[in-house]
Amino acid sequence: MTEAIPPETPAVPHKRRKRYSGKNPRRFEEKYKERDPRRYADTVAKVIASGKTPAGTHRPIMVVEILEALAPEPGDIAVDCTLGHGGHSQEIIARIRPGGVLLGLDADPIELPKTEARLRALGFGTGTFIAKRSNFAGIAQVLAAHGFAGADIVLADLGVSSMQIDDPARGFSVKLDGPLDMRMNSLRGQPASALLEKISAAALAALLDENADEPYASTLAAALAGEKFRRTTELAAAIRAALPTVKTDAATLSVRRVFQALRIAVNDEFSALDTLLRQLPACTNPGARIAILTFHSGEDRRVKKSFDAGLRAGIYSAVSDGVIRARAAEQHSNPRSAPAKLRWARRAKN
Ligand SMILES: C[S@@+](CC[C@H](N)C(=O)[O-])C[C@H]1O[C@@H](n2cnc3c(N)ncnc32)[C@H](O)[C@@H]1O
Image 1 (cartoon, helix red, strand yellow):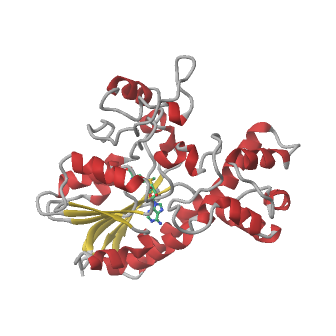
Image 2 (cartoon, helix red, strand yellow; image 1 turned 90 degrees about the vertical axis):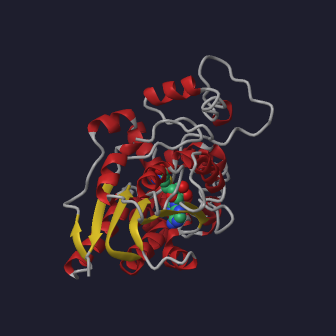
């Protein structure tokens, strides 16, 4: 497992620290101890033991199950399509050495350099680990650009990382106040605020339905489409206000679903996944192992359909029998693993 915090997680920038009142810091900026595990290992261990994810890190999900599905071996060429904090990657790299190379892709220009520095500090040099800012829809071009004909291992752990969710400045959090952005790559595309301002009610209702199965899609679309929301908290409050007769807990679920639907749209997540799934047969070597971790039904449906079609066509020799879920102990110790669904496929040997 990769719960141990490595020595070189990038340090918190040198700025005067925000003071916090009381015993436990609540705001991301106040959690400087969690973000400096080298100096405050005890604090980090306590946060993990309490079932939370230390600020500025990500706890990799279903590591044992993923390693079992991917069966990494020395000399393998591996692609981690969603490098994130590098938790899965570091386990894979340790197993493909000597001779193997892991290509770690991530669309996020803010977190990728930090993760690269972290993995380099663990001793993974450029001969074994290549970090590349890229959307995984470009997997074929990235492999070719690095001179690889195909991969023996492909992992995708979809969605956003804890570093992204927990940093209010990224605008993903339903709880923390921040700009309504939600872009994984803030250098491209439009923030969620711009999308909402431009979209029609009909298009927004379709988007909420398609991306999050939102039961109040039409009501919410009528209230939100064309409106100017600059902050995450403004949007969350408007969603609740649009559902005055809905109980608080149910309205909270709607807030989560609307945020999810917007995030998927802003980052064009379904089309990136569709492109990846389409390219996998051409990007993998005979006998390659593929594992994909999804977090909601729209993603899982796509992976299932593609793997089943590949099995019928003889491209894949085996696929997982249904979804694999995190064990109860992991769900208990890391609640963010609860919705995860793992599917794997094995490329035919011919
Ligand atoms: C759930 S996290 C991965 C966590 C990682 N497995 C770990 O152990 O730390 C998902 C990561 O994938 C990235 N991501 C999501 N969609 C992407 C895409 N289409 N192309 C490249 N990166 C993507 C996000 O920026 C995020 O860093």
